Structure formats: structure tokens, C-alpha cells
Amino acid sequence: MFNNSIFRQNLNDMVKYAVAILGAGNIGTALASGLIKSGQYKIDEIILTDKRSPRLEVLGKRGFIVTEDNAEAAKNAGTVVFAVKPQQFGSLCDEIHGVSFREKIILSTITGITHNDIEAIFGAVPNVRIMPNIALEICESMTCLSFSSTKPSDEKKILSMLDRMGSTLVIREDLMSAATVIGACGIAFCLRFMRAMSQGGIEIGFNSEISQIITAQTMKGAAGIILATSNHPESEIDKVTTPQGITISGLNDMEHQGMSSAVIHGIITSFKKIGEMYSK
Image (cartoon, rainbow, N blue to C red):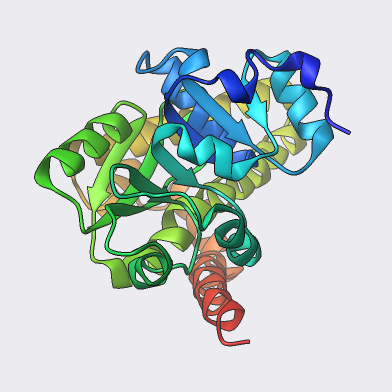
């Protein structure tokens, strides 16, 4: 059982928290860390929940206020984040159905759970679908979001909060699944390419540490150019490639091996998987 001694304070004596994060998995924990790192909240203004006692023990030792009780945490917070896995949404709703959300804002990171799904259970309460990635933890996330039943003041508050943990983009709700693949899954795709490039660096002479540093900074620079200029990647590639040069020979060989088509195919496969999850 979870050891209550690591609580910062007893739930029965709780004051109202700024944020309750229901689900202390990777995204939930990254969000909590980002909120603190960005200077928006102190650690004792956030409460995290999870049903895994070992997970709560670890987070409690890091100084977070934690509990297994989703309903109590939600009741005592102004902003409530649903950060559980999609298959856990039903049981979460069963647990917190008695909580009034009329004076709260719901944020949901749950893939495939729509505004209508949330409002069918909790009524027309302010709710925001957000799709960040794990770079929340270092305040470098790309977060897409859509609003429902929110006031302009709610939207301003949420955008301000998320903007301090990276970049935000308000999109149509029907694009949230696509945002999941490009933004959330996408960070894994980028990291896999980074790993491959780093491994290539090892084969041509660098040790693993140096190869990874060079690769990571090179990818950061490439992304920085596009974000700073809004140029098409191909126009920047043209600046690096010369006739009969080493860059174009490597690029062409990668394309012959199916690099671009493999990436596109993987993105489409991930997108289809979302549909399969909710057609069962």
C-alpha cells in the first residue's frame, strides 16, 4: 500500500490546489515538471494522482503532493487535467462523477476522447483538449489544443500557461488525432532518427557520447532554421548540397533505401492505429 507519510499534507486538510493532474504517467509528470520549471506554480500548488503505489512513492520523494484519490484531488483544484490512458477514461469518470466541474477548467490529454465525450458525462463545462509531448518537462513542447464551452478568459489563461512550456497551436478538434501523431508520437520518430544518425557517427569514428552531442545539436540547428525562417526544408537542403558533393550522395542513398517513404508510412500507420483503438 501507498505510504501516507510522504504526503506534503493530508487530503482531508487540503486547501484548493491550482492544478490537479489525474494520471501521473509520463505526460502527467512532464506537465507537472514543466509547470514548476516555467515558474508558474510552486510544487505544493499541484497535486498528482495515480493508482500505482510505487509511482506515488517516487513522486512523493521528489516533493510532489500525491494521492490515489482522483475525486478528492479534482474537487480541491481549479484546473483539472485528465492524463490517464484512453482505456482508463471510463473508470476515471466513474470515480469522479460526483465532482462538480462548473467552476473548473478541464484539460484532457487523452487521445480519442472528444469534447462531446467529456460533456456527455460532466455537462457543458469548460474543457480543453491538449496534445503536448514529453518536452513539456524542459518547456520545449509543441502543444496543439482545441476549446469547448470556454470563456475568452479561460482560453487566455490556458494559452498563457502552455506557451510558457513551449509552443502552442489552436486547431480544429477533428485534427487532434493528426496532432497526436505529428507532435506527440513525432518526438519518438525524431529521436529514432537521431539514434540512427548517432550510430552512423560511431561507425565512422566518433565515440557514442560525442556522436550523440553532434547529432543532437545538428538537429536542434536544423529545426531552429525552419522555425526562424519558415522556409521549406528543401530550400535549406539546397544550400548544403553541391553537384557531385558528399551531402547529395548521402541523401540520395538514404532515399534509395526508402527514408522518406518509411517515415510517411509510419505516420499513416500510427494515425490508423488511433482509429482502430476506438472502433473496437
